[in-house]
Length: 250
Image: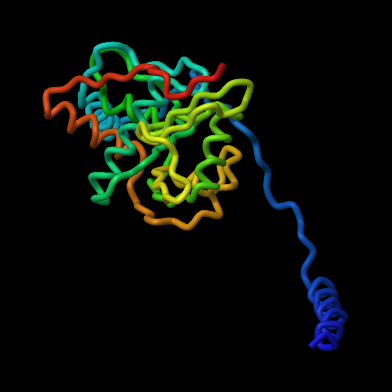
C-alpha cells in the first residue's frame, strides 16, 4: 500500500504538468470597479417599489408587542446580570416544558445576549435584537467532575448567565456551590440546558464538547424567549428580572 502511494505521486505530478502545459493561457478580459453604498447613493425607484410591501410587512411584524416589563432589564453586572438571569430562566423553563423532565442548570453566554429589554412594551424586534444568532437548545448530562469544571469556569471567566446553580467564590476559589438550593451530590448526574454554540466549545468552554448530548433540539434561543414572554403575558404577568446574588465573587 505504501509502495502504491509512493508510485502515484510522480505520476500525479506528471499529469498535472501535462494538463497545465496544454491549458490555454489566461488573459485579462474585463475590468472591475468598487462602488461604496452609503446615504449619498440615490435609491433606485424600481427596486424601492419592489421591496416596499416586504419592508412594511416586516416593520409591522417587528413592532408587534408580545409582553411588557415594569423596569428595564439590563446587562450590568460582574458575571451575573439581570438579562442573563432572565434568559437562563426562560431557557430552563422551556426545556422542562418541552422535554417533560427537570432541568437542574441552565446557562447562557453573556456575549450572546446582544441587547437589553426596555421599560414598557417588549416588541418582537426587541427579541431579534437581543438574540440575533441561530443558536439551538441542547441538553447535556454532567457528572460531578464536569459540574465542578462548569462552576470553576463561571468563577474564572464571569461570562455566564446561570439558572439553577448558585456560586459563592473568594479570590477565585469556590466557597459554596448549590444546585437548586441543595448541596452538590457527587453521585448524581446533573442535567444542563445550553445552546449549541457553548455545547460545542464556544467562548472557551471546550470541556462541554466532550460531554454526550441527552437531547438536541431545533429550537432557537429567540424562539424560546418569544414563547416564554407570550406565555407569561397570556397569564397576566409582566416580565421581570434582577441581579439577586446567584453568583457572588468576593
